[in-house]
Length: 187
Image 1 (cartoon, rainbow, N blue to C red):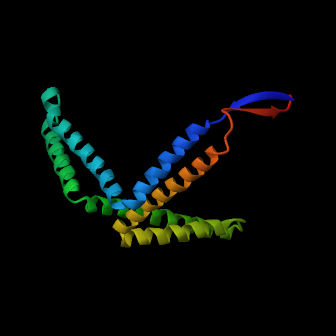
Image 2: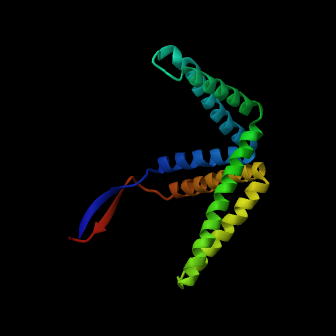
Image 3: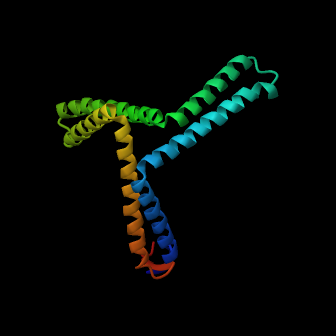
């Protein structure tokens, strides 16, 4: 037997990581609308900055053969970014619709694949049937209620952060050192 030392996270690293996750999760759970708005705000600011650079780009690139189109696209980007800041629920709804279409598409795909799997007597075809059904139901829900669906997804992320953070905090109570002896077999 050979003894090796394996580095494991320190107690304080686990505790700080856990605390950060719990705090982030609580903020998300308490203010899911604000969380969605902040994400949309950063997205809108990104679009505005890209648009501004597109507007200014022909000034720095005299060889640009599409300067007019570049400026027009820049102006549209800035306008769209400002619109998203004014109407953030529009962006959230679009994101919800995209997620809904994606889930519906993959759900139908899984159902079609499961049909083929059943025909060839694939042992776990029922798993594909279930994933297809769940994806179709989720997709329809998101398509019918995209804004509420996005808020629910944010809520799930917040809950996940709180649970993971709590588990990390709990595990930090039981960590003794940053090096652990591990017995390995001789090769």
